[in-house]
Image 1 (cartoon, rainbow, N blue to C red):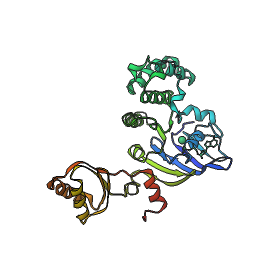
Image 2: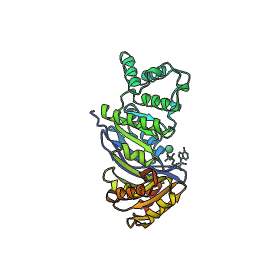
Image 3: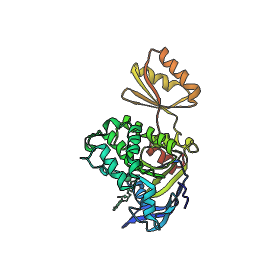
Image 4: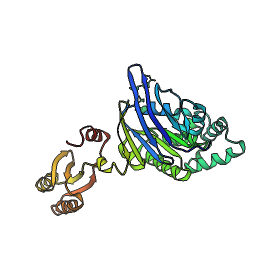
Length: 316
Ligand SMILES: Nc1ncnc2c1ncn2[C@@H]1O[C@H](COP(=O)(O)OP(=O)(O)O)[C@@H](O)[C@H]1O
Ligand SMILES: [Mg+2]
């Protein structure tokens, strides 16, 4: 059977006693796209991935992964998926080297023996880990270990990748590197990515489409570019001031296009209407008054802000 690489979820439901972890979830993730499932702790993200990789069985509903039904063909589903579980690190053997880990898993996944060395070298080089190939997995930095776990997940050339919070344990630089790798992997191998995250900014940067879940239910779903307005509804800016903070505050408060000024330590937070026109004006007023502006940045919307926006319909 010629399988596509999409993920189709229909009415997927899973409870643990009274807790409905995943509640009537339906979603289509097109082949070759990067999808982000976003939600706070306990929303049901990991349970969704565990259902999709057949570690758990749904009580109702089903899903197909790259053409295979998770209930009827779990073995096939496992063959065509690569999984980075929540604690991805723990899928590696700490006392084996990076290379040995991948070799072991390649055999486990029945990668043809003669292809194993080439594929490991390609992957380790691609992830900038080739120089670390003889280091024990347990002695790698968290970022390197996460990248090795990612190598492990894609080693058998799966059609669909299920990544559970791939950057959660990483510092910002390592997280950025992993995001770049996901983007270049998606470009190079055209796999479908299903990524769990609780970081809105991250998901916005790399995902083609996003769904937000809360208590197991999808509360918002759409293409990232179509949700843009909802995702950036704030027009709030953060100005960090090194001197004359009082003058700066005065200027902001008296500008007719500035609303809701608040002060936090050396930082002013302000909502600025028509920022494209007004920000340059404001900045030159501040500089003319001798205010030293260290930073003038758009305030990123947090997941919490977005929930309020979605749940209250943006009528705050
Ligand atoms: N094995 C389990 N046994 C009992 N409850 C569970 C189990 N796994 C998850 N849950 C519960 O299901 C809900 C969803 O959890 P989870 O899918 O891990 O959320 P997330 O990954 O979004 O943080 C939570 O209330 C969690 O406590
Ligand atoms: Mg989780």
